[in-house]
Amino acid sequence: MGVKRIPVNFYFVCFTIFSAAILGMLFYLQILKGEYYGVLALGQQTPLEENNSSRGSIFFSDGVTILAQTVAKPIISISISKIPAEEKEKTMQELSGILGEIEDTGTGETIKKDLTNEQYKVLKQKNYTGTYVNEVFNRVYPNKKLASHLVGFVNGEGEGQYGVESFYNEILKGKVSTFSVLSAAFNMKDSNLDVAGKSLQLTIDYNIQYYAQKLLEEAFNDWQMDSGQIIVQEPSTGKILAMAIWPDFDPNQYGQEKNVSVFSNPSIQALFEPGSVFKPLIMASALEEKLVTPETKFFDEGVANIGGPPIYNFAKKAWGEQTMVGVLENSINTGMVFIEQKLGKAAFLRYAQKFDLFEKTGIDLAGEIYSNNETLKKGYPRDFAVASFGQGIQITSMQLLRAISTIANEGNMMEPYVVKKIISQNNKEEIEKPVLEKQVISPDTAQKISAMMVSVVENGGGRRAKVPGYLVAGKTGTAQIPKPTGGYYDDRTIQSFVGFAPANSPKFSIIIRLDNPKQSDAASSCAAPIFGKLAKYIIDLKQIPPSN
Image 1: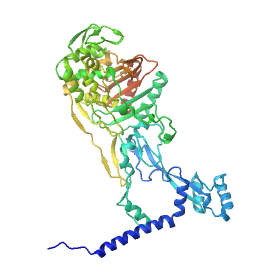
Image 2 (image 1 turned 120 degrees about the horizontal axis):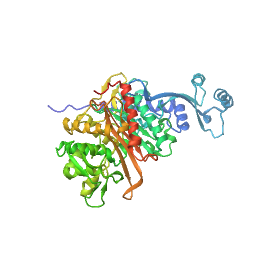
Image 3 (image 1 turned 180 degrees about the vertical axis):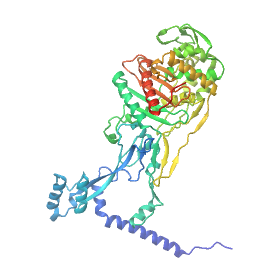
């Protein structure tokens, strides 16, 4: 049987219908709505509908407190050249009476003014020729600077920039099809093709975020650092509970920022050499390989020679005989070199890879970067020796916190995330579930390194991170900052603290990072106390019972 031919008339009819639809739309746009679009074209420095009215909202973890929303703002556009000559004087007088003085420069230009609700009602009713009264939709951030780096902002074209607004842009703004525009031209409903944006409920706890940013502001007043970061994570799920960055910005006023670099989120978009906060990862690797135990002895002479310049401890101090617990408690660089020599280059790189230090964390925020650390991989023995205490290896703060959270979570690495629910306009929810990536170290090794980190807080350099009644695991770090031309600055450091609590059943992990604090010599003086304050606040907020 042959293929049935479709009559030529069918194509002609289809073409005629489609042409009529196009002509109808043009008639609607150019004739019926010609004045409106004429005013719109003349009067806008930014699009009239600055952001799509259907863009979804963004909420904190409680699902009630708003981080970002789209709101209507009434405006009037006055195209003076469109006002009939015989009506111009009277119209301008009446408009001035309602809006205040309106300057007519004689150029026929369009004037745009924001309206109060009362003015909007009056002018909508008057409907003067040459004016168009409408509501535009602006993206508003009610909490201003709170979580600004995490949320990002929406630009004048309605596109999300940075953070959650960018990463989830397509989900938030929805979709409007060409056929929906055609339907609108004929006043037809086409809801299946015009899809409103969905809303997001974050994992970010409003109270923890607020207090973390407050602590960073206090830290600047006390220590005058160049910048600072605090990230709080739930180790068992990967949820980010807070991500505070200083200096911050107001996404409502993003156009007023002169330096666009302020919009970047350094916790995922800036590499740094972590220093001694890196030591627990290398210690855990050696424990996992059964090359050392917490009680393994080491005699420190204060210097290690691996070729090239000698490697010293902080202040060139010699600690004598120490256990591996003592190496962490006192943050002994030469002790870490001792461990690295046992571990070897291949195992060092293997565990760095297992802790995912050479790839992105996969967090759902725009612009995350990472380093392959190719220089280290091709390096000399001394390069690996200094990397054992966090020099010459580059990572992000988020990479480091995820690795520390892996220790807190019995060696299980979870994918970090900031959105826990995606909510459609009909309130249908898509719940984002925690993702277990892999087992990095055994539960036994995780328990041993956790106990060693508790000892750092109880007996070592992390004492000021203590929370009475609770076991806190942590590690300080005071890292030198490399020069772009090579070598390190003598007077600049990154001072940080990483840890988790309660150590026997971790509910949160935290990284505190202060870049180049001017009034502090070591992280034990500035970063550790901030950790202690924030940890106590979270414990009280969540009513976490004391450690046994």
